[in-house]
Image (cartoon, rainbow, N blue to C red; front, side, top):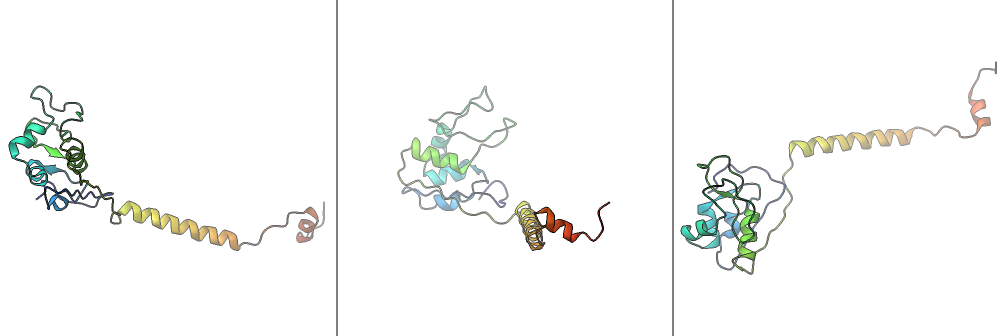
Length: 154
């Protein structure tokens, strides 16, 4: 269904509209880009109209952002397929096509290696803190400090 493999993401977008029941299924990952076919199915539009909506220019590979068009992701070659971020498809459906029921849900992401390392560091810092709190505090006045020393003054 998606042109790229799905991986864990920080956010995941589910877009739903009254025109198409499977928008949420098609656009369920925010970090995975969707192709023309998936956009066509989710917007319930013909392939030709999706191409007509798309912000492309034969003279410019990556034209500047156009709020009235469906803006594809950055391409490095003219032969690269047009891929779209799900949030961009949701923005286009809401702002340009005036589809009323467009929502983007942010869900918790699965634990990544970076998050696991940060959790381990946090646990170690908590352990160090508890050990430092367990050390008896040094006396603050000079008289009690002299009493702790067994050697005579020089």
